[in-house]
Image 1 (cartoon, rainbow, N blue to C red):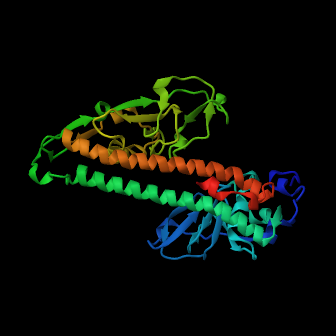
Image 2 (image 1 turned 45 degrees about the vertical axis):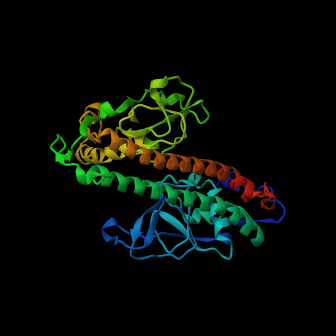
Image 3 (image 1 turned 135 degrees about the horizontal axis):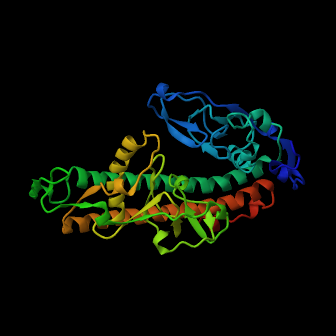
Length: 396
C-alpha cells in the first residue's frame, strides 16, 4: 500500500502525547454474523448493517458498547451502539477495544477514510486484515475520554433529535389515521357518512384530485457533467430522496419553477418510489424527481400522509415491471378526501405545528453534523486540543 495514503496522514508527525501504533494495537475487528431475513424473529435487539440499524431480532451477538462499520455495501460510515445488538455479515465490529475508549475508537475509525480501501474483488469490500496494519495516532486514555465525550455529545444530541422527529412523525400519522381514515375528528358524532368516489366520507367533505390540491412540479434536465461539490445551486437527485439531503451542486441555471422549498414533498419517479419532506433549504429538482407543494386546502404534512398509500400501491403494481417508472399520468389518478372548511382549518393548524417542529429539528441536526464533521478529524489528529474546546458554546 502507498505509505502516503489518506489514512496515514495523521501519523506523519504525531503530536506530543500521541503515539504511533497500528489499528490492530487499538482494536480487534471481527466480521459480523449472517442473519437471512427468513430467520429473523421480532425482538428487542437492533440488527446493524453497513448502512445502520435495519430491524430488530430476538437474539443478540454482541454486547455494548459497540462500534460497527461497513465491510461491504455502504463503506465508511461508523455506528456507535449502546445496547446489545446483532452485527450483520456486511459489517466489521469491534470485538475487543483493548482498553481504549469506545467513543474515541468510533471517532478514529470515522476519520480513516475507509471507503478508499475498497477492494477490486467481485463484491467490493474491506477486509479486517487490511485494516489492522494501518498506522494511527493514539493519545493517552484521559485524552481519549475527553475526545470521546466531545464527539459523543454531538451524537447524543443528534440521536435525541432523531427520536423527537420519530415521535412527531408517529403523532402525525396517528392524527391522520383518526381524522382521514376512521373519520373520528372533533364533532364527528353529529356528522353522517355519504357516498363518494372514494367510498363513504363525512357529509360536507369532498373528493379532490391531487392536482387541485397541490402545485406538482417535475425536474430539470441538469447535465451531470456540470455537477460539482461546491457549486451555487444544490440539486436533488433520485438517490438523495431517502436521505432527505443532497451533496450535489451545479452552476447551471434552471429557474424558479424547479425550486424546492422547506416542507415540499419529493417523490423519486424511477426504481423504488421513495418520498421525503424536504427540510434542507433552497434546492433544485433534477430530472425524474417530482415536487408536491400544497396550495392551501390541505396543509403540507396532511397532503404528504395522504400520498403514502397511493405511492405504496404504485410501488406494488409498477415496481415489479421491467422498467419501474412513475409518470404524471399515475399521479393524476390520485384522489384525496378533503374535509369541510372548519375541520380543515383545525386539522391544518395541528399539522402545521408538527411540521414546523420537525423541520427545525432536522435543521438542527444538519448544523450539529457539520460542526461535528469539522471538529472530529482535528480532535483525532491532535490538531485541536480537546481541553480548549468550549462544548457549551458549540452545542448551545
